[in-house]
Image 1: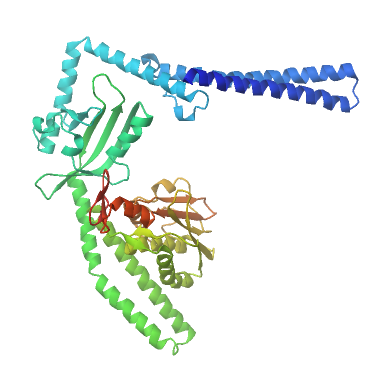
Image 2: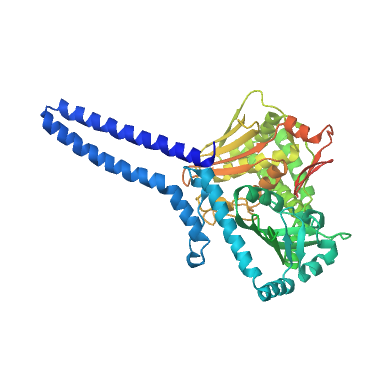
Length: 509
């Protein structure tokens, strides 16, 4: 069935439903009026008037529904018309009636508009020369790619910045030329795959993209902007512009590295401190009065918190230096959850909280780095303890989702998070200004947790409402699924910018 016949069928069934509904309401109205003892002629008059009113309302709604595809098409035409450049592009994802036909027609409108623009420009060789001159002399590195990802143009600034000649860039695949490392899960490759399937024109920006230089231990760091145009007749599909920030980003990284070095010196005394506190706690627990016993528990909880802080700082430094290495192996997830609970129960007790665990039976083993997965759950539980306010109960749940992954959630009934804050929770050093004076912290726990979870191939999310508590959840993949990617090599895997690669460890790239 073609798209036009499908649209005709949708309209036919919709109108049939409207007609039947109007008729049924008219008959029901007549029957209702008759049961009230109204004379026959009056009953018919009332029913007729009500039916006409219902029919008018139904006709108005039906006309809007049926005319919506034409309205969407009109919006697409106005969007590409120069005199209506303020008209936004229609959102085809929200179209319900005739989506396939509309998508096809709108794409053709955009293609015709693009072809017209190209034709108009090609009629003036002077404009072409000026455009090429501007691109060549642009002080920012500019790369232009075709639909196959091959570089068809690289201006002089890009050649100088990348330390490559034009022949070394021209007609080369962009992924062979640029060894890019992104801060987020969305890379250039994943973005292009998405927009090729769903968009005609799109733009995207990335911050602090790293580019490893050949035959060098150093890296370039820059922000990057991309422009995408589907099926452009001039072969230009994607343009990349690079904004160099190597010096400023290196300074920031060096500052974090200095902090990490300083914090690293704290590990030994903290380890000794925790050891002595545990020994004193075991040896003196029967000899201490309740007040001193309480002091000992608070010392132990504070030492645990300080140790977690040190680990977070060091791991964030590894993430920023692209040196977060996770050794994946088969792990029993309920055992890890119980281990985290054993260590965090004391801290919760000191704060007057209780942690309840609901772990589904027969969970499959997970493919995880035990230490890093432990830190993720510990960070989430620590946040729940700190931000649960007067609420005494915290819930931890682990279960198998319908997608076949193991999801773990931490729920508190505390102060909650404002909606405007949620999008920033996983940013480095971000802290809600409303609570940072009341609750201590570094703003690194969720940032690090996101990096670790995504390095495992999982997903982390937050759902909260101010004043009603917060739920934070994350997923891990079953070991069977991870082992399948190893293709017989049980040592480990590497996760790079463009997917999973068999190797001996897992990197966040």
